[in-house]
Length: 196
Image (spheres, rainbow, N blue to C red):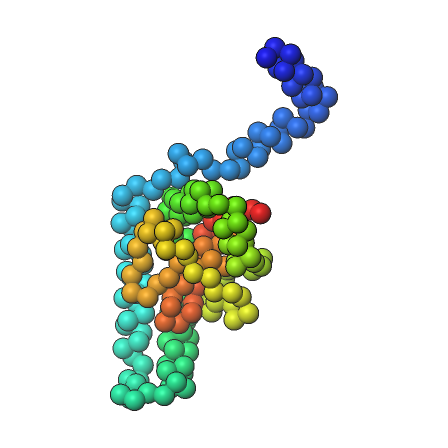
């Protein structure tokens, strides 16, 4: 053991940047102990989401009602009109409006812990499904060319529930909250999936 520690000290002496890099890598990775959100944080998260759903419902009521036998094109037109109304109402929206820093860290920890417990082949399959480097943009439509992978059911059960057609989705390594009615990204957690 003494020989090992002496050799390690010698390596660190020859490579002074190695120790700093190692410390920096450890500091950049949040530990699970840092991430849990309090019950009040989760309640605040739910209130923020409910306020968004209330805004969407209020804006939807202002639109012309659909006919009882609405066609696909009428549904698409209404969806686009609602999306435009939401974008206008939230034109100043930015990351963190709905997902606070503590809740974001909590969600990231849940995702990463779940990912670490999965077999290697399942991890590789997940990265194939969420391939890409697209960065989410708040208050924009989900990129049409991007895959729309679902969150695995066991992981979904660990995440705080979302109201009324809001969905967790992965876009590249990011966990987004998507408005399923309008396909608008309403907030996201950056780098929720570990690097691969």
